[in-house]
Image 1 (cartoon, helix red, strand yellow):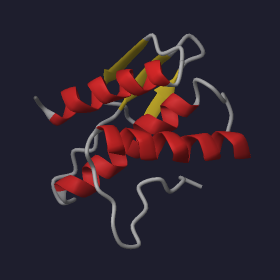
Image 2 (cartoon, rainbow, N blue to C red; image 1 turned 180 degrees about the horizontal axis):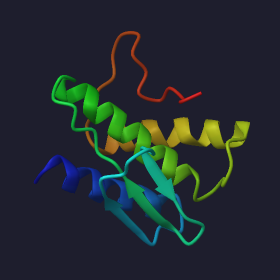
Image 3 (cartoon, one colour; image 1 turned 180 degrees about the vertical axis):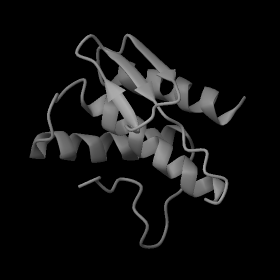
Image 4 (tube, one colour; image 1 turned 135 degrees about the vertical axis):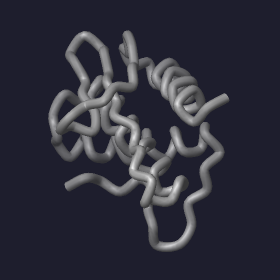
Length: 112
């Protein structure tokens, strides 16, 4: 199973557990945004492909992007409630993927 398949499967599982209205999630070559979420539950994600970045760091960025877009299915804004929920989803998604976080790097960090 590829990283993309693992991430997609975990995102779907998490959206079901959280009762989020995820209709579709696709991986595309977005030019500017890291991810997009529509009010109809369609999410588009740009996977990190920077070969200079370590694979695990790229995976952390992908998990943060997916959790960010999933959080928009509950909070379609960037309120404090959104950021708290995004951090919670990020931790749950990384756990589903078996990712370990250690040291000062926080996978659940926010973008702001």
